[in-house]
Length: 340
Image (cartoon, rainbow, N blue to C red; front, side, top):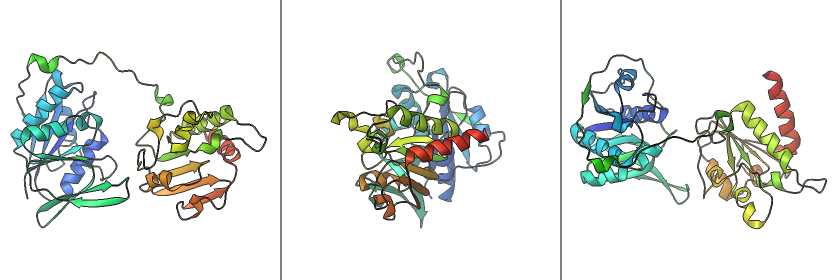
């Protein structure tokens, strides 16, 4: 088996996030020896937390210059760690920080990079990756002869490594940085309060709000404020993640009312995201193909719709409730609130 490097970065508190542990899990599944390379201000605590993962060596590029994401310093650190490991295959979590630099790092090393990888396997000593194409309708299995091969592994596709902490010996990797590499600085982070965050990739449930929430209801009126309350109350009570169909996101362009907290970032489907939550509940959406293609990796799919002949009834949902979503969600929120 070729030399494998798991390349990860620490979080602001010095820990390793779940995507990094998933990359370790993917490396272990290949069956060969692997090295772990860490980048961050101080990586010792992170290395200790995965001391029993089975890595033959731990490498670290450390210092205050690597505390915050920055292309120039992150690329230089990743390049140095890859060279120190002598890795032929580099598996890295597809975080926003690494996604910005991995292609550039592969170019510097004279290798190749593949992003949006959903599985890494090995057969007869040859490594292969799985990747989806054509709006998540076709899956390909790829192999490369070019080395090093940098692989960005999507979160939620592999089982995260679990094990006991210990004491790891980390070999320091020297990284030469010019003043030009440090011109960009992070002056602060603006983020919504935890209870205002509606996109939660690690949530156990996904709630998708369809365009029906903004349409005229049986009384001849649209109830935007009521729809907003039902949806946000459910998110607050369950800590679910929120998604939307393309039709809802684009209604503003058609001159129709929209839910004010919906953005293009919430879009699920062939032109949006493809989430991987254990459970999903679609409300006020008819189950059209462009939308439901984004649900293929949700394990348990349920939907609420007034139309018994909608797309959800044609094998796209495990359970379909023929009911008014306004009434159902009001009752569900009432029951959830009673348990608090």
